[in-house]
Length: 198
Image (cartoon, rainbow, N blue to C red; front, side):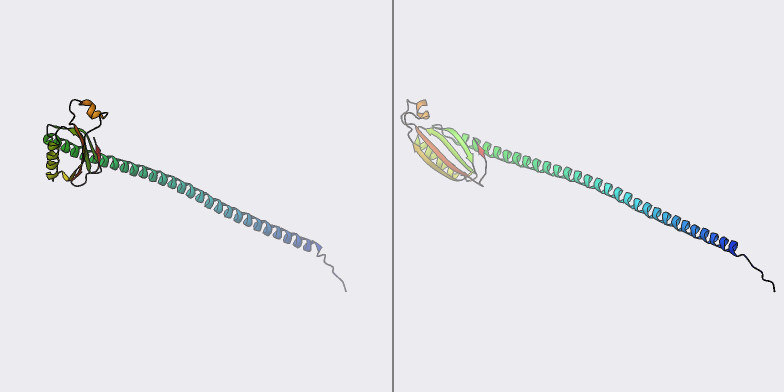
């Protein structure tokens, strides 16, 4: 009987080499796929970060524009408020000027000759009249005339009538008239006009 021996070593070696190559190829493919996946994830994250940064920059620009517009609107509001105050002040001055002109015209027309007015003061709807006279009767008649002038005054009071001292400035001007009297009249305006005029 003959025995035939087969040497399987070359086949085994070839199979082992093929197996190693397959394993290395699979590992290389897995590594390549893993690297590709990591690159894709990294690229996606980079894209998202860039988009987020762009969005934040646009948002910051929008906030800056909004703040600038709010500042401009506030400046315009402040300007409008200032203009309104100026208009109100001008209207008040105009009203006061009209009232003062009307008062001065009326007083100039109704003032008796012996009565002299030295000062007019309009404050908080009250007209103060200071002056001097040689005839108290004419002064009293004039105060009575002012009291009946209901379109201008709601109340007229003669605060005082007195003979000034010798060192009084009014008396110094007219030392030849010892019967000179100084007076003050308080007249409340109809409607309570507020303001100051001299």
